[in-house]
Length: 636
Image (cartoon, rainbow, N blue to C red; front, side):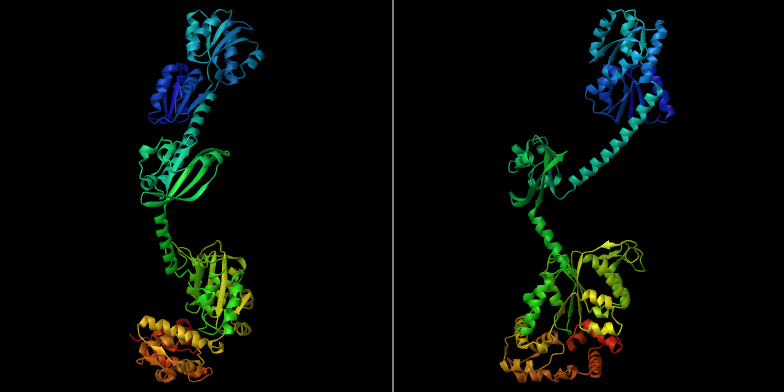
């Protein structure tokens, strides 16, 4: 079955159509039929149940098919002014009269501009318009009572007029009109194909949506009821379609939506044992409400998805878990530093946090994020010292497929992209190489990034928080850090005081860590007052981190029930030769190098164990290894 059906009301048009179909190369796309009026209607009704998508016809036959309500589009071959001029010319020729009286019996779709043409061409024209095929006999009879010289019209009119002895002339269509109709039919097929594709896409979206979807027309009749709605509402689509929503789902009130266009968002309903969230919105066409759509979600499923997303984000370390309340201390120094940080959190600008290792720079960075306007966005922490320059660039900026050997097939978004609408924390910023600094400066200035191997920029909205335990002004002076980047980062600054300058905080923190680790270990221990005094005399070069690790070690290995100053001193002996903690001042660099070497030897060059033993994090240990040019030899 071809997609175009050509129904010719007379043999002459049939032959014309056949010729033009061949000329246009549409032999395999067009089926040609000879039928008119009622017979044509029956044929069209048959074709609409098959694969035909467009019908091409002419005159009264085209009109009656359209009026019959056939669902296939009907393309009408027009009767042009040229065709009518030809009819009037032949009327003069047949009658031999210079101004013949012409009676034209035709449907209105054949009569456009005919009166103007008749006056121009000198024709005495009388029109007998048809509304339906049943009118043809009476109109021919009416024309027969006049002194008309010739009767003009369609094939049925011509047959009946001939029977009454009149001269007749069939209205014909020119080849241009027929050709134009076939081309128009092809355009309609293309349009219907596009509509069908869109309809299938919409159906697939509705059918496979995890949300329940119901569509209602203006009369409240249910037109769409997808599988998810069947499952959530425990109703069959077969039973729901075509029903009034008021009678089958009376708990859904759409009156306000249909009457006023009012939306309902997040309404909760209990259906059986489950709770669902309902959204209702109007369907508008040219600002007129033609219906409404209701969507449903299982609240339990939403909660499960939320938990899953939260876990994934936490697993990727893209969330900040610390608040200002987690930063402990009673000293005026830390209280004032927290106050300044809280003021800074409210301002969406770059922050530079400075302080010795172990003073809690990341705790402050996370707390600033959690009290800022970006608290619902990601928090991405990057240790610039722990990654080599080449890897740091790919991690920060990401890369596209094939950017370098070993790149994943689909590419990878960088940490800057992951931090979009959130905060990125660049720890140990002083360890970033010059090239990385220049690329970071561009991100700060332009607020956009380009992946490795790509040629387009991606806009990002990020707050930058950087941290360093070195003096950036000194590094700028020595040419190791870019001056323009330094001033770009130094918008809001916070300097964290070392633990030795925080009056009373050693006791406060030691007590907190002691109680925490005592609870974790399950031991029943007590800490004497003189033990806290002893701890306060130490300078704690590793700051809070060093104190925390020492208290943990003390709780684990101590055998006494009450920890006094003497007990602390007892377990300090094997600690002090490594850390040099007996001095209240900083240990000279050369002894620090030796302590690191000794610790590495003692722990078989295990970086994690060595860092824990020295009371520093891995990134700090790596930095010191680089500084003192210590080569780590692994034992296999």
